[in-house]
Length: 536
Image (cartoon, rainbow, N blue to C red; front, top):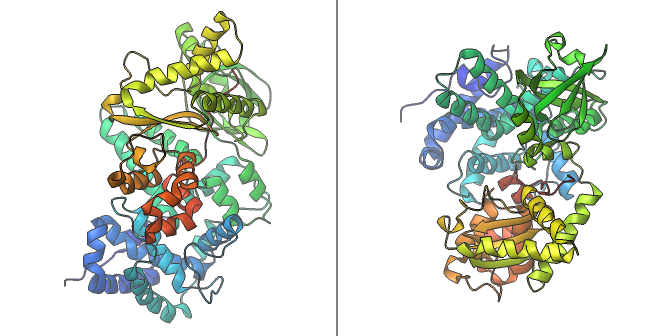
């Protein structure tokens, strides 16, 4: 077989810098040793699961783990310590007899193989106990073990994962998050590729846009993902990983954990003082004071225009983040924005906390739904009946509140606006175009949700649409797809596990034993429920 050599550009793809350091040539040589073994013994397996780009990335990914241990950049150890604090277990899936902290371990490599193969592609699920991963890990570990004693520390790399203890600049902190999510080996096949896919999509669909507009769109996309995306590993955001990698005792760790979500939207300029610019978020009416340390264009702001801008709270101050522009003031834009439920929700859950009143309203709706549905939080029906079913439930809910007719109409409109039903308008919604049957589930953490093509995951007496021959397919789709909430998946497991053959299989048993880890992995951005109800 002709050798496919790796080059420095391949290695640097997984690094936060573009110019090779003194140690990069050493690690590139190590990459090629790993690559030679992989291509000689496992080429068919690699090409069967991975596309060409990931096949080339794979040795660099594995050697980057080795470099991480040698250089003490604490990426891998940050993951393990976080996993242990969440699950009170030392390691996902595996139970090694011996484990050497802060050193290379063969079980580390086995897990990294599982993670890479299940992140770089989603057409097949690779079981954690698949024999080939143990064999491959043994071969790679032998190479690493021989190199470990003399491998050089990459001191330049370590600096990219460090911050001064007294750092106050938001942009310096943001840059660390950017490095972790988009330029770090552990997350590269995950969040870095999400960013690449998004940027590629923008470029392909905005070819005729002026250069400055295109650059602004790309900048805003990257900044948005930096603050919103979750990793497949543990479904954590970049600021959370920054805190974990720096360490709990590090002074800035709490600041990273307290960093707010990003709010991006339409604002009205309300004046300024020496330190801050006052902006009113149009959708929610909330006032934000943006520090002038983050915004050089405060003299250009115009009260007769609408400002489109992103803000993030860091160390108690709101900082400009991403991009901004001003558009002409139009009453119809103001009106539409004040009625935009998704934009209101941005402001409502900035701190990640659910107000007590919202929890109470969800409990009231859940109670009413169970009463309406014979004590059950889930209902199964033909898709063309879902519209009518939800309308009847909302009417029932109105009546349960003992409202006047006028109040009932207002509440009905309010419930629709709140997103209790996920439709754009009644006339165009046609669920039967999606599937013949579906289900309606009241999610206790977010409200009513509708799902299709998973009815056979629920072998309940009231489910006339359960088909045993489709059960495995539907359970797999429910668990693996990000389209379905983790609450619905847990409801299935909690109530149906003993009746489903899927959970009697080796794969099913492994998933059940590590259910929360898998749900975070498969539903990384959907794992953290946001209620569809807010205080209006």
